[in-house]
Length: 273
Image (cartoon, rainbow, N blue to C red; front, side):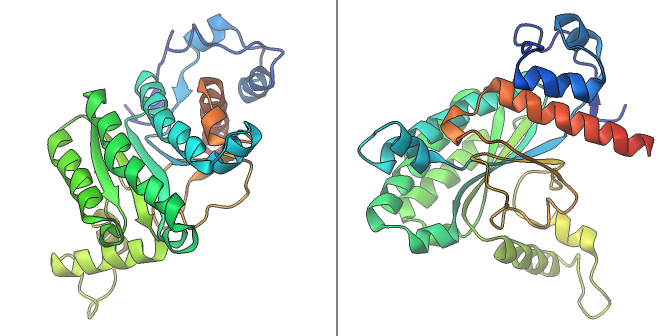
């Protein structure tokens, strides 16, 4: 059975959007019929094996909520990762890569804001993954840019969650081009790549940081921004992209279902072409 196809009868029966809602209308267009509980119970869905998420909009969310600082938005956004893991687990999506913090933002944002982000990365995110009891943590990025205590907290979480069935990669202090360079270097050091005889893209892919499934099928970006901001350029080279207008803290299960439905429709159309 193709791992990207799953019969998910009843999987979302309690969360089906109204046919009159925006999500319901898109689902109806995706499947060419009115969407109700019975439809989602019986429709085989094409699910992405690996989903990438650019969780953007925490600062704007805090401003719109009238909160005194961006820190409250970042905290809400970090806590929301736990929701995402649960939703993906319920939908049989076992590989996630989440864009947490770019190397560029570490350099450009205020020291107070970056310091608070480091606190969340070192204390909140490892705990969320550990409590899940199902997700193995992987980190991609230049951890030398992090305070030593934060880097060590992440390393401990990677060790303690090793061997679990599902995989979540956190892109932290991340730069897409540097990620590719790291993959090339690792492949050469492992003897899997010899620049003198030619470059094998597969060998580079295999040696990129992250979980065991490298290539991303679907990228979801929140906040309505129409760009990827350097997010996993090699791994997402062939990915479908879904842009949600929701700010990350407001992104919910219905929004995830909408992204998955659009992915299924596109994948189905591509298979029929």
